[in-house]
Length: 199
View 1 (cartoon, helix red, strand yellow):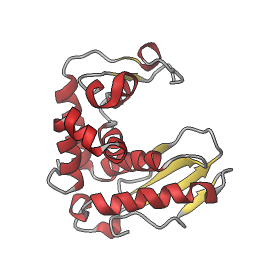
View 2 (cartoon, helix red, strand yellow):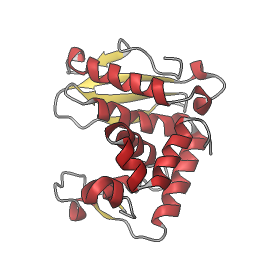
View 3 (cartoon, one colour):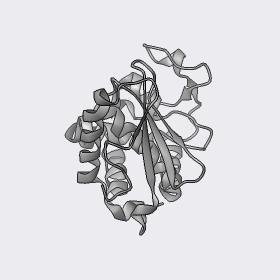
View 4 (spheres, one colour):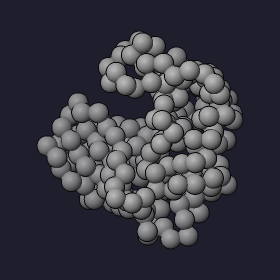
């Protein structure tokens, strides 16, 4: 891909089966190629690198920034879906593009205002979060439903957000429903992906 992603071969197996997640990665990268303008990344798209690390089934996927903002890793379980790959790319986009990260944090703060963060395990029906994970729901419930709304508003202490990750996942899962239910959020995500919003 010309937007900094590498082919499905750019994976490190960490107890997981690379073959199982390969299709999800390929589909996620295809979605990114169709929606993500290289203008959004920088004038130097080859500067940005994201690698995949495949873990055992059942482990929670996550994104981790590396030594500088030009590289990061997406950790996937070997049974993760395309939507999960896209979600983690949302984190990579915010991390590798500090101006987009700032724009996402500003968008989140504008939306949640003074709403106090609450423990996710106290407000989400399925639980399973660490005790320190907190979120705010805002109007995110309109596009994401009650449980996922709290995660969209997850509080990272001003370091990161779930705005691009949850927004891109929703754009993949239900673009028309997302646009109708929360046009402001939909337009923010599209604006970032098409290079109109750069922070």
